[in-house]
Image (tube, rainbow, N blue to C red):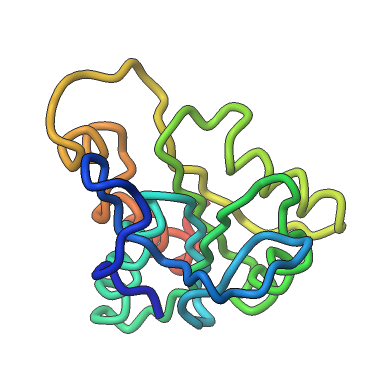
Length: 161
């Protein structure tokens, strides 16, 4: 399980870290941080923490969310994504802290298409011009905050198209 007590950056740019230095290197780059069968939440970087927080809130509502840290899109963990899609009933929410075009969501969709998988996917990412504010204010304004992830996941679980 990820803990935010360690950091992976110099003191001036502290960012909580969900990886360990002892992890074995492998060709596909993705890691399941939390198991769940109702929906899979996929993030990279700062959005992994958003996904973990959303999974906690979803659990309070009886929704079990798998959380994937897709820490590399080259190579993307296509096998892991297909497994996540199958394990979550074909419901995926991809959360990224930049524009969705050509981002993590695109890599996820390409990998799944190449594998012949057809899950229902919600892409949450920046769709407008950025403004000013705290990191949390900017994430909320962009629609990639915890509440947004929870809403998207519940929408998929309840069958919204």
